[in-house]
Image 1 (cartoon, rainbow, N blue to C red):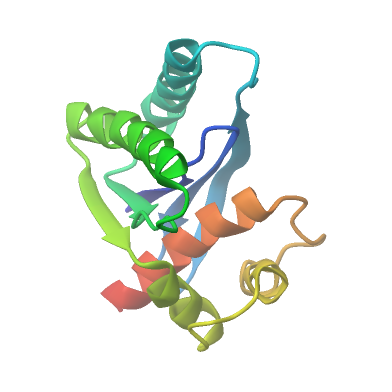
Image 2 (image 1 turned 135 degrees about the vertical axis):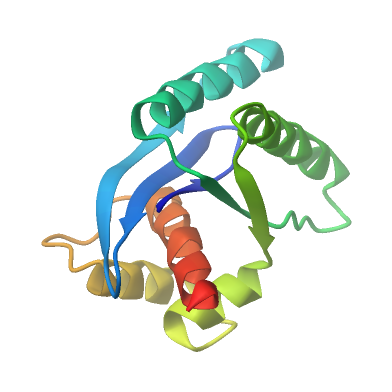
Length: 157
């Protein structure tokens, strides 16, 4: 089974494509989709959609894993924009007939570190360790995307 994890954001989206094996997994793709703040919102959404579509077409994942949206009540605009990005990603998943799964951040952290309030640094280190990477991940977005896939695999077992 091939699983796609997307850490959805407007400025940068972490993307992880993993093939699940019996008791392990192989990372097929790990990267970021970045947009420029100077571009109109519609262009940024289209860039995310078209870039992610190419990845889906190449690797043919059957599952899309996203983090459930959370935004502080003091930042309603952030929540609205993030909701738009997630809508674009979910629409693409639906168009490609993928199973779409959402997890709260605490579930992802607990699945990866056994601690629901782990720091970003703890998550990045644990994801790198569990994935047996030679070097630590450069970006938190990459760690989050890979952690989403790991949480899905953990939950399925």
